[in-house]
Image 1 (tube, rainbow, N blue to C red):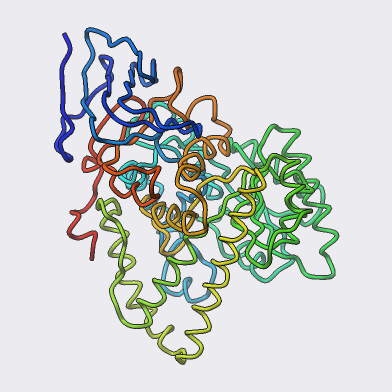
Image 2: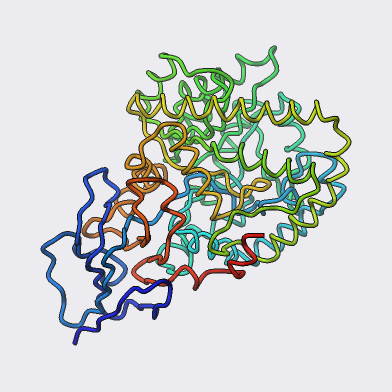
Length: 479
């Protein structure tokens, strides 16, 4: 016997996967870039899409959901997150200021025991899969536990990062970014050490190798460019993707020559050139812009400087209360640091961020127009880039860069799945793939801001209102 349900706002009885579920009447973007299908039918059973189109057979036992007037896309994929980072500086010991204020190991203890906070924040925001591009080893078991978990996004992780010690930043994190003695950064000081670090990641169960490739000192640039190739060769031998953090053009080219499959962060120091584009095409690289972080950081710095409370930009109340309190208290802790700057110094700081953002946007559009795969990515977990809702700023920055909304849908679904190496399982609404989707009030083919109007999320066949995953009231989230 069919059971008919109507989507009215966010009042809805959660569906379970014991019987088939059928969603009818919506306009569907399937994630492939094809034209949207109006008045579509989606049949879901046992966590997978069984049919999507205009001529699907509806099982007699199915729950029928009338989504007339709504819009559906595949669940969003955030292709750059960090579960071992809270969204504040307690988990980023990149400065002595942070070390004095917070205990990194205590922060990691909490995150390790409360991964559901981020799980819920992602689902609440419409994100059904994430690529974790670097963190402590405790994050890696989330890969297997998330596969069929309707209460968590699908998780793909690279675990600890590899870096050289040939820059002040890399030396600092290798010394200080440790969780009860376990390093988050592995060394590559010699060829053998580089191979051992890659082997260690394979042993831990990493699905990728992430190299944090800060510009090396001038006298060892050639040495580490060659060593990056050693890392790439060993990763390929062991069947691991090579991800490289390289936001400057010279290092990005070196990463591509080493075989990088994913470049994290837009090139921000100068325009990408034809050599870069040629190398990226040859590698079939996935390019992760992470543009929104510059805007979010600038907004937070202005709030702290002027003594204002944080604006979490969280329309559905997805960010958990502990994170909110941590940030609110942190604003007060670091207010004096920012207010010691002169108005000119502070303005220069903001202008520098604006210049980085502008270059990132220009390059993202240039890369996209060259036919290179771009995947929506936020760098969630770094300070003030919050797990879940940060994706809305990222999507809007992509549209502001001149990328069409219809292309942004593909970047946020199919291309993210490609970055994870899971394009045969998720990222598009096609027969046999995971039933991960979201329902929106507004048309995402007209504006990326439509993703803010999400009402429901389906993860592995279970459809629920996003309010089921909200962690504070939406009134609080606007504060």
